[in-house]
Image (tube, rainbow, N blue to C red; front, side, top):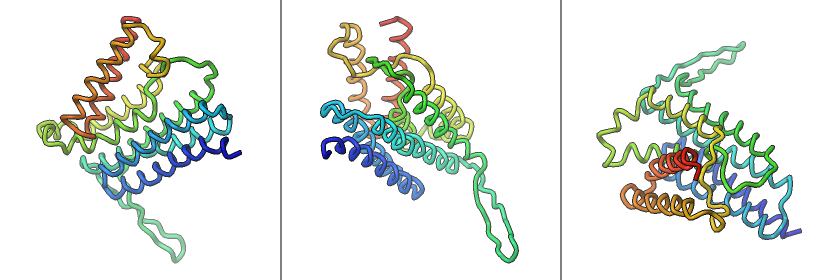
Amino acid sequence: MIRKGIPHIFTLLNLFCGCIAIYLTFLHFSHAALVAVMLGVFFDFFDGFFARLLKVESDLGVQLDSLADMVTSGFVPGAVMYQMFIISGARNIDYAFQINEFSFVFTIAPLALLGFIIPLGAAFRLAKFNLISDKVTYFRGLPTPANALFICALPLLIQHPLMINFKDYLLTPIALSGLVVLSVFFMNIHWKMISLKGVEKSSIQEIIFVFFLLLISILMFLFLGLASFVGIIVTYVIFSLLKNVFKI
């Protein structure tokens, strides 16, 4: 009984990290929010790992995993993007309501709500993923955890000294809207994306692809720190595209 619950504990830790990340995001603690998402992704990996290792995979675990991912890898990046729209100049509008003797003011930035299209795209992807029964050694489309790391690292990249000359171009409503569209698109395309699953059975060309991806990721991390997740995920998508084009 305890053995069956171990993967669920890791899944719930993933969900807990997502809740903490939401709280940190709305406090504008971008760095801490990204770390919380990273921890969530770490726990997300190990819930499946232990489920397979202990041979306790279950339908409950699959559903629970998706619900946790919907928070950590779905809602959190949407909240981060909402905050980025606010920073870029999206205007807050006050809506006043009065019901009998009660009155209140609701403040929201309508343009910034575009950021919450990301959770919608993540929900659609996760729902489709739950319906896939065949096991393959690649991802179909950009995994939601990878997308979450990309979005949550954007505030750090924009603030990085090496990116100071590009800040005014990246932090605009048009650029952010484009990133929202691309985020949803790449999560739901049918490209075969590189995965480390079954890499030991891969061809020499696939191993070389993975090697160079890891090498570039390490170099980016040395120069940009946690902000490097933006470049790492972009590189990952480009490498996966090349892998599809050349049918490697």
